[in-house]
Length: 242
Image 1 (tube, rainbow, N blue to C red):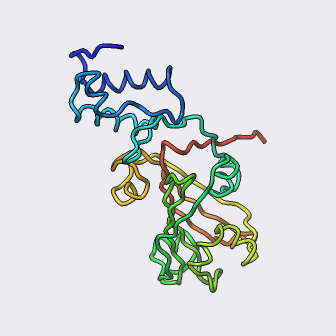
Image 2: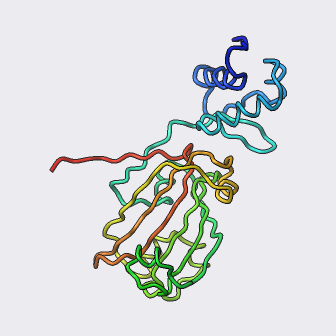
């Protein structure tokens, strides 16, 4: 057992000690000692231990489950290739995980200036707006806010998107063929409302994604803004020389 010194902030030292333990002695899903056990082992306060565990969680090394404890996270995730059309449902299934979608909001409203520009519409044109929480194996993964031109999806209901994946509806019900999906992403920190939905601390690192989907007529049929947990997603892009 490595001793705790006084030359470095105590919670930083505990982070380093637990990081080393996770890397060398533990595997994904293993349960870490409880807060009380860590306090007793290293002679630290409960506040210091909680700060250290919060730091490990932000680094994506552990996941904390209320009432159960702190577990080693699975850091060997497959990367999502942004060169191909992305489907959350298909991606999770390919990884052997069970996808789930919870529709939090669904309505039709007038397009504000920014959304109208993204969808190639006029300000005030009707758009379908939905907010969905995407989960895998019961773990919250991302929050999506999707906008669709209402004129292209007449009759689409909340019950429809609760029953089947959106892209299945787009292609099989509305017979739209997706040609390409342009996606941009950037690193950010999560705001309070999304943090609560994702089960992560406020200001934890996240990936923000912006996707614009086109059909074969080069018409925009979807614009989605997503907030994804940084400890659950890893992206890659393949470049090919022409």
